[in-house]
Length: 317
Image (cartoon, rainbow, N blue to C red; front, side, top):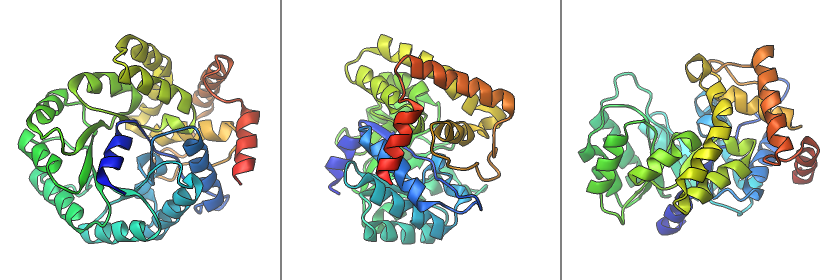
């Protein structure tokens, strides 16, 4: 994909669908493709395959390829598919080439998880991967310790389309945007809807979302308000999302994907539990709190009814 077209997509909502598992815990490709189809049909601008909400680190390399294939199939050209890659540099380069071969539009490099990763060397990792990738790269910056110079080096690389900025260091973000070439990589809010207004005020464009699995209408409403500069409306919508997002932060974010998957299953498409070390399932108290919230959203018209979602899942299959 042309890097300018991808950068335009990144100014929107980058949705991260969940990965479905069958009764034996294996990746269920058909249900996974259905989830991607639902998110694409909802009008999400960029769709990230095997991102954190898709449990990237719990998947084997072959399973990651299966998810990428399901994403390309399910999205069916309705939006760019940005295939998540990572692990060792050599593995990540191989995944990037593989993603290009199966029809992905771009790749997103997950943050390196090596406990001895030095910030400047992580920038080297991203740049080396961008050099070798046949597709434009989105760099996922999640760790602390980076400098403005580090961010500028990323932003000016010719094959880096965007920087998914996923730390709450707004001072670093604003200084990095000011110091970077405005025609270079786009700085994107990597902390979802809750942080999107603050990031937008600092100069970022677009945001990532796991909520798109459940209520894409609300994600798009936040984006629409921010594109108009209507921060009051954006904050009001974020306030409605706050109980859902707060549930996801329990257990040091261990319930992050769990809440989303249980909400998707409640909608009528059973996607299975989260793989350990994530929290596999919610306890009954948290599950009922989640269901009550979803029912409130449904009554308000913010999400499709369960029967609507079951019908769309059946049609996608």
